Amino acid sequence: MQETELDDGTADRFLLDTPGTCLLVFYSRTCGNCQLAREQLPQMNLPVDWLCWIDAGDNGGLVQRYEVFHLPSMFMARDGVFYGPVDARLESWDIRRQLALAESNYPAELP
Image (cartoon, rainbow, N blue to C red):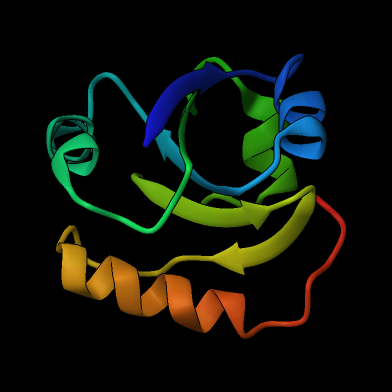
């Protein structure tokens, strides 16, 4: 699993051009749960190719488009299409389950 930082200017192009599964994670530098996510998610053996970090404080456009209401928030995209939110606790078994559920959604255009 590779990691990258995305922002309002780079997210769309990256997600449209990058093959494979991307887990988008909106976070804040001042959020305690987000700090745990930054530490733990890269260590989890998740079925994703990319772990994409988006700082919610610096990227209000993406926060609005993805309708982020709490942090951290996770979303799944694969091969340029959007599969929706991944509403899971910070446990690998729960994230895996929610990724599988998201994958069963009808793919949509990126927000």
